[in-house]
Length: 238
Image (cartoon, rainbow, N blue to C red; front, top):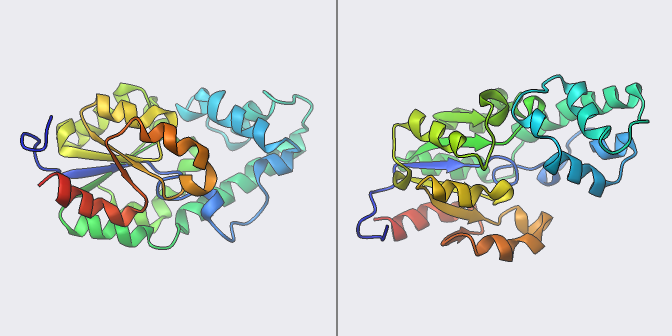
């Protein structure tokens, strides 16, 4: 669909972690990283967390200590229950803090987009612990719709979670931007749902800069800062 035939943008749909906030971009987050508490290498933890734990993300595992156990025991089944419980306790505190203390400028950027007349929605792959602090976060009040994979039983890049968002908005895909860091093939999947996919490198450039070039190939649009979204809409979709 080219610019002349594309309908106007009515909503901006955001990813959450590594798009609007991130533990690695939250100075002062209390406690230790889970892998440190458990005595696991960060590489092994990330591999199990991101690639071997679908059950937590679709809500089949929801108790905080069960989530930690499921991930940790894929790496080392000798980790004690005491360590698992401590890691689970601290993880809840850290994610709540992360959501309640987003990086500077994020809330203002979201408010500016909303105040310009665009509806805001969220689609996040998150487990019950990662999502539980959302209700107390200031930025949550700016969103009309918030969809967490652990609540709906679908996760990105599954098409059902994008269809659900569009149904709740009452919009068609071309009326929406989807903004994310590109994890879980979310940009490809959002484009398949008809949305205009936008890569944001605001946090990706500091955490996984090596992934940017590959993900940039999958989209027509990219921004380095959330403040670039409004100019993108006004420049490309009006």
